[in-house]
Image (cartoon, rainbow, N blue to C red; front, top):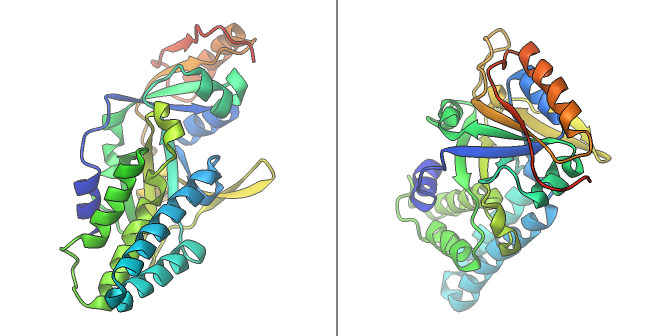
Length: 285
């Protein structure tokens, strides 16, 4: 049911190309494994956005509870279940993309202060991962919602969604709380609206989830999923080449040397036909 309500709320095709900013270390891990890494959302760079979204969702239910005390038996358990989902067994993984591939703010924030790269992807190439639901979980490539009114509208539609498989009150409470927790990584503060972000979001199946992997970043042990893990590919399955269209080297001080070495590195990993260009942004880091 999350698929139906999500597609109703987040309809619309992604732009033809999407961009992922990362360091050279991140790029080499991506092309060597032929897989993007989706971090558990509580460990992503923008930790304040999760608090913003939780407050918005909890506030919306709280307002319902205050205005309709006669429905307390419905809204109070929903509030408790949402707190439970977000505080205990809530695991959602996301990989971020931008609509533009040469933004100074993104070079600074996500690509080693200009010393990294912007990877351009053919958005249609992600259909092999975000199409039909797999037995390992739900994966969708959805846009991020920035406008406060639009976010509140999503929450309202989720609460009022009339087509849950069961209309029994305990079931509806759980369905709505699960839906809201799934939409958690699609909300972001309006100050970031220029990013025009899309996210590849994966919610593991609670019964038989794939095991996460772990990496160290900025003093944190970060759980993450590879795209092939989301698709449930066995270890012996051949890799699926990523739909990389171009790689843009950031405006760091070694950009020309990095372009040459990156060309050799991509050749070695089977991406020899992918063009490598250099950002023209006047920034040295």
